Image (tube, rainbow, N blue to C red; front, side, top):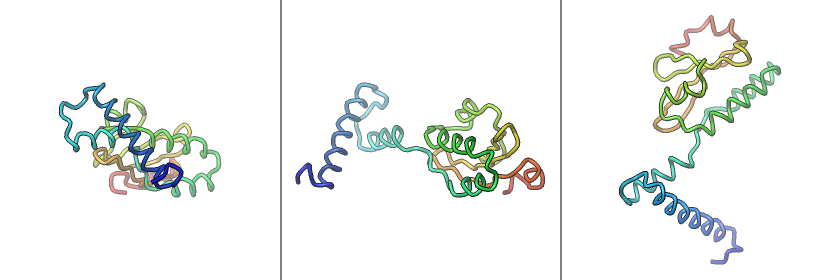
Length: 146
């Protein structure tokens, strides 16, 4: 397999990343054993971002309400790159977010003109956009059930 072959290049890059991670893993001594499961968890812990379902919902909204596009894109980027393991981690970054039941969080967008409800699964780093709307639309829904 040649390094000029796209698959060979991909595999070589992956192996170099693995070597780097093993060295970093040993340097940090974050995990006390060298089992594959711990190594895999280390990779996931460092390199998997939050998967948000779905950006299209946000895009449709900012196309309709153009004055919040920048704020929604910023929220999306920050959330996608986050590594929150609990609501407390999220609250440290977004202190004005409101906590609802069942890991639902209400974010104030554009100075509280808009509300965004997101349901999180912190264990698997997943986020589902449940609602986005104006403050008046938010007042008409049951945020705990949407």
